[in-house]
Image (cartoon, rainbow, N blue to C red; front, side):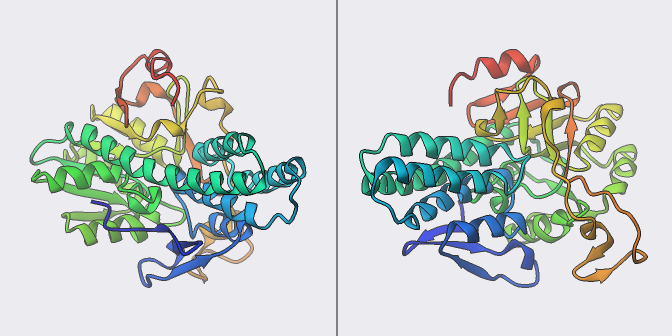
Length: 345
């Protein structure tokens, strides 16, 4: 089912579909170093919380090859610096830190440098494979919530591009469509980087799923007119009480959905859940360059020299979320208890 491979380990390199070039060009990058992974994450050539986690795992494996010492402790100290650099690439996506923590545990278990390097690559490959399996489970669970004739609103991009697998919220939509459900999709353009217009529309078109594109500010109009059945979105970090960080504009959609009595679902792997924080108030929101608001593809769309704010994410309180769909099942309120019952992952 994973016909699209935005990330692939091949011949000792990370092959990456450059998402900044979509939809006009499908260009793959050959990444040979940890620093190249960091740069790709920062400039959004690689994006989406699960995909960032996978890329970080491969980045650590690549970075371990660049360390030229044989003493185990010295190697681990330098590897810690590699991990710290990766952690600074994007602050909101939980999967980034989850992958780093997991890779660090593996590194600590190695007997010597060669053994550690081998274990790190194997763990990165395992994380990548697990994401595909998790995506498919999420998609199966979520597809059961979709009926014939539904019109589904989705925000940002949550397909294969965002997970390097099958997708979360968009994976659910694709799975329902492949199962024969007669559905339509409304995709928001998703400011400021137009990831809905550029990426979700591209994936939907490739999958042959009927859809239309709207601006972010049109969502309320379509809800009021009764033209939306339910909403599926992804997540970049979920607090232990169910509060969820996702692409900017998600909170607005959740409030509108509650006002119009529409189901609003979050789809994400359990690796996106941050058990260390009690609420969304503790989630760091990434602030990106204001030029991403004032310019589109190097073209000014606003007067030169103006001030623009550019938070990449917002927080949707759990009270607005109808359910959280994970690979382990569908979580329902109260989320604190449901998340505690997940146990270790």
